[in-house]
Length: 121
Image 1 (spheres, rainbow, N blue to C red):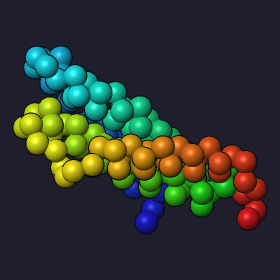
Image 2 (cartoon, rainbow, N blue to C red):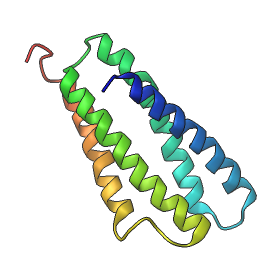
Image 3 (cartoon, helix red, strand yellow):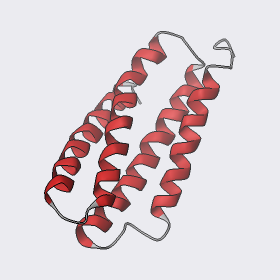
Image 4 (cartoon, one colour):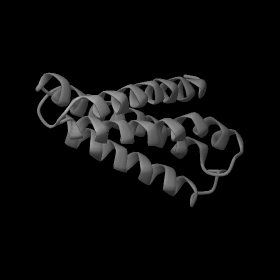
């Protein structure tokens, strides 16, 4: 799949993050929604910038790409669960947020490690 998909997902995360932040500002007791908004907005920027880093050959491309996919999946699970819990008092499925959080951490680890691994491998 094209690296442009990261830009697409980043744009969706940005849209969702702004909407979640606006809702959190107007709905009482939505701390989880504010947390989801922050996570979405930070990772939206990363995913939009990821193709530029991939094309600049600044790191191991395959490992960086895997990190991007892990981040996208993890953020979707983590923030999806928080958003549903905040708005409808029911999550995606048991342990969705922790599973998403672990994927996000693994994604960041993969991206960080990609800078240490030769891009010629």
